[in-house]
Length: 425
Ligand SMILES: *Cc1c(COP(=O)(O)O)cnc(C)c1O
Figure 1: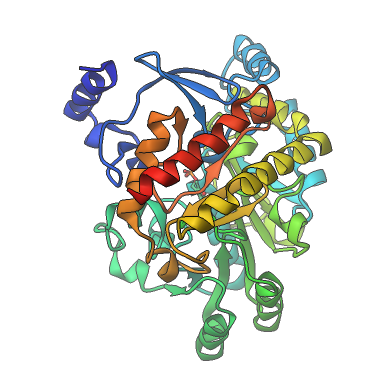
Figure 2: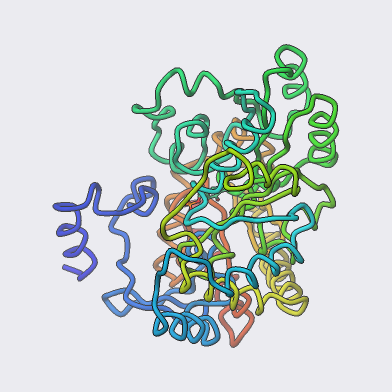
């Protein structure tokens, strides 16, 4: 029996499902998840000594490669000076300045500990600022595991087939309107009927939690103008796309500026840190300047702040050009095989998905039409070939910019091509 199998059994005795976040459990694809022992650059090693090229990258958080020396050094240097004070530090100021300089929509920013917290608090700011309660979200977009937004929430829920979630009060869910992604008319209809009660529209500007689904041309611009017409706060949830798709995230890449922005994953450099920010007048609603309450004992944790700041320093134009070039090579290398096997391919920068469906989905209804049995075969064939993919059709692949070193990129293209053959079964 493999060490991972033993650990998984032990884990299930004391941790629900053996995991601290549900998607990791391999429920959608079956089998035992490899327990990870260590990682370096874009390679991870499990407790049985198997080496994989990592296309999960901690669900997008790791972009400069695992255990990047500059990030490790920054975290170590911070830790020896004390890992938590619950008091302001200079490093927080430098991090906030860096975020403000990069992200077009952010004048002021506050850091917190997870993407879930970031969207929860951004939503509270929007509700506090507008005095309205309703929120519009998109089917298949995921914004974390809190009550208001755990409705029609894509990947984890789709993977496990939980319809919404027990424990979310109906009264809370009733304040959320769920409309199809890329469907401006559906948004317009909701705003026509009850626009005066809508505080915010929140979305993934490129969806990653139903597989990689880009915004249709004009979709983001259309939302921007609808929000302006109806006095609604536009929130881009860039927890996945922020600092990954460009220096300033999807809003820079697509040239549409939201009112509030949620960040996470990459911004923490692999540590638990996230952030929300936006226009100064909105962010000044937050206590202690305004009366919208938001707080966190470990918010601005010195180790996480140091790691995040170090990660952002690595993300210059050269890094983004590398990420783009790697993405292009994967896409060019796979496009024929994907088409031959009746699949489709979506990519924006360094996030992509092979869909087991003949055209790339534009919304969650279409994504759900994928052949999930074929995906399972694809997943396990890739794993056997040493490629660690997200264990669900409804998750995007992410890579670090180190993937162009050596011959690993060629191995990824070959391995995925073989996995497509295996999936066709
Ligand atoms: C991962 C993710 C979240 C949640 O972040 P956590 O740190 O897991 O709480 C929110 N929104 C999007 C778009 C995400 O991808």
